[in-house]
Image: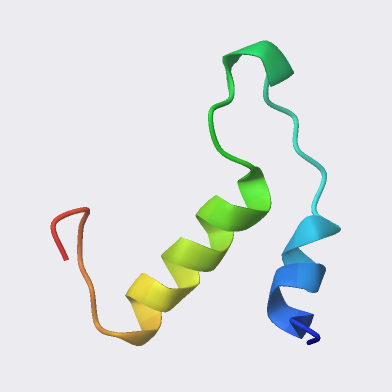
Length: 45
């Protein structure tokens, strides 16, 4: 199954220090997009 939005986010360059990253940037961006689309305002939503 294709996931075009996630594939797009995988193309974004991650400038963070790899050793200090628990989650992939693409996953964080996807969660942020989903939160925005569902009218979320902060981490509690």
